[in-house]
Image 1: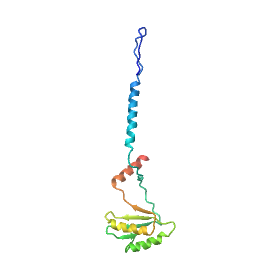
Image 2: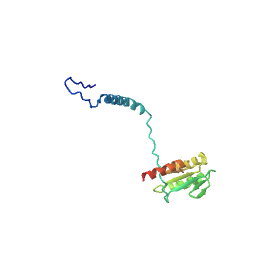
Image 3: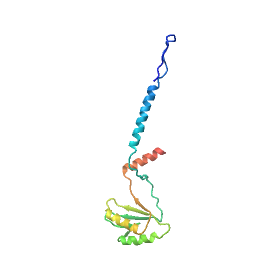
Amino acid sequence: MSMNVQLDGEDQALNSTINTTPLVDVMLVLLIIFLITVPVINKRVHVDLPDAANVATQTKPENIVISVTANGDIYWNNSKLADTTELLKKLEEKAVVKPQPEIHLWADREALFQSVGRVLYAIQRAAIVKVGFITQPDAASLAESIANSAQVR
């Protein structure tokens, strides 16, 4: 603490200096509180979260589009396939091509997971490495994406 004491013979002028001792005391208390609470906030399980990015699909001629309809029909580009064995034969033919083509999987929102799972199993058995799930963004995230891109410009 500091204190300004004047003797009897000096001027009785006003003391215009700022006493910074209370400010320093408050700042030290805040610093101590901050140092105590930060480790408590950071104690959680470390998980590597994926980056969410909306990347436009790059359509290349060698990409293969496999579609699964709501009733479970499988389409290779635009031609309907009889079953997953026919799909597996076509995938095995394309798996040996260098570079290996990408599979873009379009699944109807009402398609059963079992139908999509059969297609994924065929892709896995054919040893295709790159598979992309094509989705349509919901209206809220699409509007947010457009607003963010407008702010960047």
